Length: 319
Image (cartoon, rainbow, N blue to C red; front, top):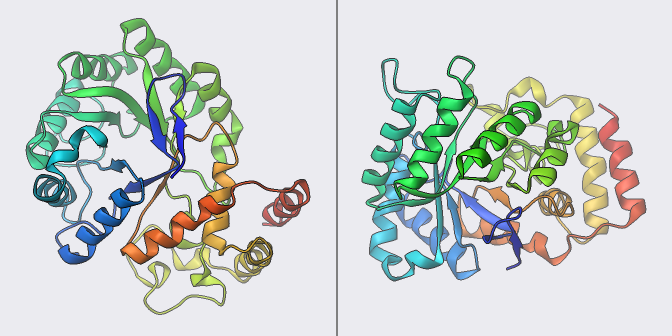
């Protein structure tokens, strides 16, 4: 495993971190995800990323992770970075989502109980709140850190300008923002429109989620839409109409470059993110230990020749 400095902090994160958004809920097989967690740790993944609503059902990923943490990793807590978040809908009523101090504090208290922890290492505001003053959300993060319920504060899904304001508020409060978690992949590059530059300027780390664009950047869709894939399901983030003929042709062209590099399309997509030193770590999901090990192979080659990058840019520009 390679480890990278998180912004200007003292923390180093593994180049690949494990996200528990999917595959760790009550609908999943405990034997499978227990093996995945062991495989992650045994291969140097020290960072496990959760949120209050991960499952399904919401909350179950934290409960299941907590059980395995205490049964199997009890003596390794100080070797781990555990993160959680709040901001999306978690319980009914006006206090179950967004960014009020009431929501953020209550949500973290619930998360700590579910995981049976005294603290998390990183606590994120999961998404910006258009109605709550930014100062209130950031003061809540500062208060949480000062209370010892989290060691570091982070934000997620914040656009560049709002992130910059959040960083200034947190710095003034005395709790600098450690990390930002944006959606970022070859096919979703909004962070290049100013956010990455702001993170570098402010000394804040970056940990992209959905690096494979919900599975698009894998070999799964190179010939269309398989029956049991995410895009074939009625409910989900990846929609069937996103898999156009043009998109499939684009993926096929990218796959040719990946094969020339001795990588799968997924491995190249992860390596492509890690080529940027401003990216601290990349969050991957894994439905099995085998899938996780396959993702880790990207670390064998995260450098790109100039010609490779130029070819990739031409392909990505052809939407």
